[in-house]
Structure formats: structure tokens, C-alpha cells
Length: 336
Picture: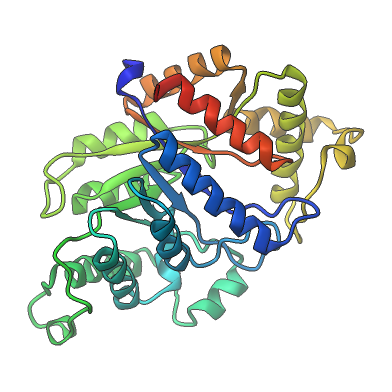
């Protein structure tokens, strides 16, 4: 994979750092989007999470509208809208409005996870039955609303998603297991594999997606990218501190309960038992970190394994300055 052909993108979750408000976290997301636009990143996606104080991004469609108005060229999108939480018609209208406002710059990334706990998800959408067939029907309805088509004899024939738009945002299905990749292939949609969630089976899932891809009204050929936690620094000590923080955060998440933001000083003396260390070793496969030369080799290997030319970086750091610098160093590797 030639470095000069690599596209860089960002998935931002609006992390709420220790001592920082949710309002400041959103302002940092805005600043990062502007930076990514200036540096030449391809796309900037924002996520949907609920009932947590450590991530501020709950409504990607609202945040996308603001970010698109603050930037010039970069594509803005959802990474993703958790479709089972919503009405397919409402999602279609949200993104039709975005497409009317910012034609040709919007991506609609879709997931089928709740982005929260089951209780919160049941309140977001009381009719959610967690059935695979329901998700597939939502995908059919959503595509029909976006294209002003409908399955014969269905109620969708009587409904038009407004506003009418001249263009349709590309549809991406997010996958961490491979199943949604099969759905993406069936519907002729794009696929984004979440290596930052599951570091195993991704290359095989992307290959299966390509093999099963059926051309659609949206895409004549398969398109895929891979998202992974990334941290780049010229400071070896800072890299070690960042890795220790990520180790702790992953275990914190796996143990459940209410998550909270921590600093390196909070966790530097934490010791782990053998079972926890085993999970740490597993979770480190979800992260690519290092100095520029070291990290570039890791990224090139990952993209070669996946046979994709687009990396979507997820970077969460203790300090905002380190987050900015990491994205600057990453851009210097591939975009200059």
C-alpha cells in the first residue's frame, strides 16, 4: 500500500477529560474538525453515546450541522447513528436536511449497537425488540426514503421524506464482528470496520464484504475503511503514560458500572492481577501508538492486512494539546 495514496480520517467521540466540562469537550471537537479540515483529512465523523458522563456526543446529526458550517472541504458524518434507537424516517429527514445544507459533504454512518446500556436504549426507542430482522427492515426503509422509492404495497409508498434533496449521503455500515459487513455487501453500502472495538477478524470480514458485494443505486463497487485507536508523539514517556491510561480505561469499561474520567496521576500506581493483565494484552491490539517512524510502520501493516487505503483514527488523550499534536504528526506522515 503506497503511503501517498493513504487517506486519513477521524472518528471523534467528544471525550470529557478529567476537570473539563461537556461543553468544553464539544468545543474541542469543533477545534479538531477545523484542524482536520486544514490538514487535509478526508472525513470527520462523530459518534452517538448515551447515559455517560465521559463522552459528550449524543446527537451526531446536530453536531454535524455545526461542524459542517465551521469547515470548508472535509466530509462530515456519523460514526454512527445507532439506527435501532431511531425512526428510519426521522434519520432520513435529518440527513436529507444536512445534504441540502451541505451537498456532497455528508456521510451517513449507521450502527446497530445501542451506544448505551439496554435500559437507556429501551427508553430511547420503547419499541426496540433487538431483532436482526427489524434492523434489516430499517435499512430498507431508510434507503427507500432517501431515494424516494418504496416497496410495492407498503405504507412507505404514502410517505415522502423531506426536504427533497438532489444528492444522497453515502451510506456506511459500521461493523465490529463482520455481520454488518455482510449486510453492507447485500445492500451495496460502504463498510467501516471498528478495529478499535474488536482487533480480531477484521481483514477477513472486509474480504468477505468485498466478495459478497452487490452493486446498488449508491455504489457500483465496494468501499471500506478501518478505524483504530491511534496515538503519536515524539515523547516516549508520554507514549507510555498514554498506554497506561488506555489500559485502565479499557478495563474500567469492561467491568461495567458508571465510567469516570481519570488522569495518569490517578492510575499510575494501580496494579493488575493475571486475568486483568491478560485483558490488557488483548486490548492493546486495539491501539496503534508510537513515535512517527514506529507508528507509520504499524499503520502501513494494518492497512496492508485490511487491504484498504483509508485509516480512521480515534484519539483520546489526557491533555487536549497531545490530541492535537498526534493528529498533526499523523498528517505529516501521509498528507504532506
